[in-house]
Length: 119
Image (cartoon, rainbow, N blue to C red; front, side, top):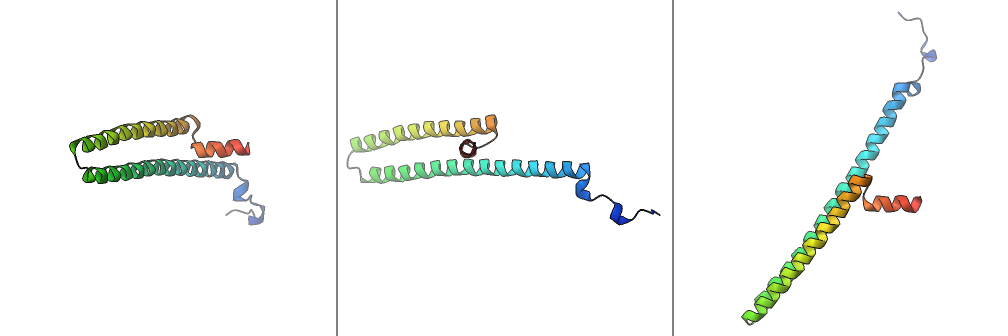
């Protein structure tokens, strides 16, 4: 049907659509990689917070169990409440910074710092 020889056909890589597809795939891969890093940073931040709170809760429970009078119970519970409020407030600030850095720059703080160092 076609009299053209296959050795005269352009390679797939040389076609404009192929270059655009390769560029798009590369961009999508970069985007996926960055979002995976963001997800990992989010997961790490929340798991570290949960670990800190659980350790503090266990410590407080042990203190409450060893309390000898109501005043000791009241003091331990009050101190736990203050620490919990401070921890949740600090955590809210950390998560807000993480969300802000991602929405403003599209990268985690660690990635931004690496870019600045390479910069």
